[in-house]
Length: 110
Length: 113
Image (cartoon, each protein chain N blue to C red):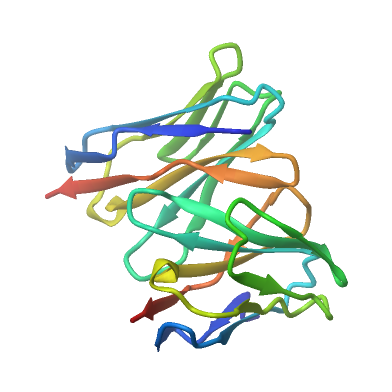
């Protein structure tokens, strides 16, 4: 089945710096890759997603890149702000469902 | 528009007890699912449904049961609670299989003692 790895598990950056989180997947049939942000005590919230026919997608300070050949995709957050502090999960489609990565705890230090 | 509503938010059970975690959505989504979240393990799929009357098992279905009698509701039943089922449970819904546009509920924190 599908296996999704995510690195790093924790990441601390200074406010205003960029943050990058990387994920790899194993099933070449996966074709949809969402990213979720989870704040303390809340459910995950979709922040950006990308389909396999697209190499990059941007939404303001957030971007996602996909390398299908290497089976990896990354989340890029620029000009980080304290409110970006949260746990971020990547996921890869697998049949009718998803497999999630284990998460990255991002801390933005003022 | 409430989105996905989960009740209760917190629950403590004794080993062997049974209970039902409720999930309701008001977005007319066909696809609904239940996940459990454990530290360092991300979200793991328990059961899912692609429409009323249709359910299937996910990655970790043992000890759980589901039914989908209406589009709106997708309850998760713990048949005989075990300490290994201590976790945070999330319900999610989407307008399409594959979870495009997934909306998650706020979660139920369950402790089994």
